[in-house]
Image (cartoon, rainbow, N blue to C red; front, side, top):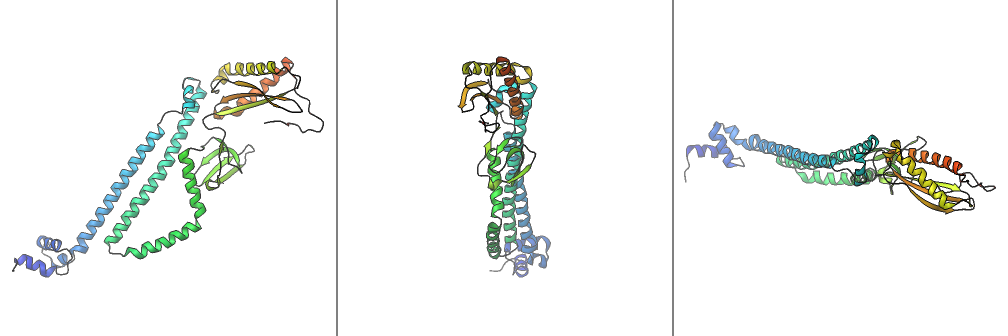
Amino acid sequence: MTGSPTVLAADEAGADCADYWLCQKVYDWFGLDWLAENAQTLIATPARILLVVVLAALARGLAHRAIRRLTDRTASGAVPTILRPLRNRSGQAGDVVEQATARRTQRAEAIGSVLRSFASFVIMGIAVVLVLGELGINLAPIVASAGVVGVALGFGAQNLIKDFIAGIGIILEDQYGVGDVVDLGEASGTVEAVGLRITRLRDVNGVVWYVRNGEVLRVGNKSQGFAQVVVDMPVAHDTDLERCRTVMQEVADAMVAEEEWAGVVLAEPESLGVEQITAEGVFMRLVVRTTNADQWRVGRELRMRLKERFVAEGIRTPVPLLGSSAGTGPR
């Protein structure tokens, strides 16, 4: 069967062309033999590569936008239940709410950064593989080599990977954040920074500790949501314990009633009574729930006022036994 002159010319010019339709169209449009013969290399392959790049960029942009909307919604969430009563209190309480909001925002930003990096890595990785395939590069040796290198890096950097995975878990679960007083086992103190690899603490002596997240086996958070002030006051064995308990409750109630302290106390003080009886004396316990930032300040003020009231009421403290060390008793 004899074809048209144009088709026959395209057949001759594009005999080596893998896509007959494309070669014929290029020859029809431009009438150039060399362009028709190389249409696959000069037009089709670059067009497919450009399409892959455009789609990858679009997918990356959409993924980042979705992640950003998700993290923004998380950052603007409701105030934690324990802090809701503080909305109508003093300015110091407002600072606590702002601190909680800032902490939630920091967590959302950290999570968003991790998710965006992961999405970019996956999308761009797929795009690179597709582009290499369009260029005719055999991916089997590359994949095999990448697998070997990945295994080697996995063994060599397993501690680093462990730290990063643990850091992501700490951030996602909100185990602790900046400003919390925590006990991480080997180190304890106030958290100054939480990263994906390390956590930075500063203890009561001002020493800065850097703790790898992968080495954190347990976390004792002393100030998450609220802090608890526990005051154990020692009294002599012959003390009227019920009267002592009442005095401690009165001192705490009077302090909370003052405007300076009302904004930092989250619940009514509780005078629990006898906590421990030792050879030296009896320890009476008082518990006050406060904001994180004011835990130590409230504790010092309470101890000072209790000591002054005990002196005024004639409540005696125990005399240390011969040979006993000072400060013995529960802390």
